[in-house]
Image 1 (cartoon, rainbow, N blue to C red):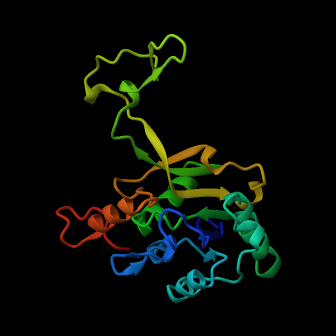
Image 2: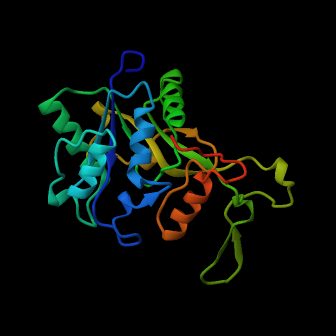
Length: 240
């Protein structure tokens, strides 16, 4: 709990994956991918329950062995390529309310963000409560500043800047911009509906590079392996 609010961590882990076969349990640093997120969640003192929502028996077994609760296998209608994350979340929240208990806060932790740490989760929850947020998501600062991003007009072929400001600015004078990295989402359970868009949560919490790295391709997996390797010169993302 945090400030009297109970916290349910949901880790969604569908079995199907096209880019990396069985991605959610692909090996990374000697552990299955999802295990990194489970351990990070369990290293957060505020989380009351770590629940994995999956349709896959292999992922369920790995998750239980890693210390997560897997009280059900996700129904088929929530496991297709077109299934929405919010529907799987609502299913998990409703399951808990019906079979165990209701929770005040839901924190979504995607297994494809294995470099996000227990401290990242802990500090995000503290930020959420300290700033009286109604919803929050994690951000990473953009390395490539959008001041030099251009569009091409379809008809005139002229360039249009993305930002309505001049681009002759020193980089150190450019205001920072951020992108949603998908590592952490926090919402009140009472506010979740089928229309909820987690990527439109109202508050942002910045996590350090490369903790927001999202695993989508084999190259991303190789990059994550390099970052957590003991031989990495900075080792900015140690294993949780």
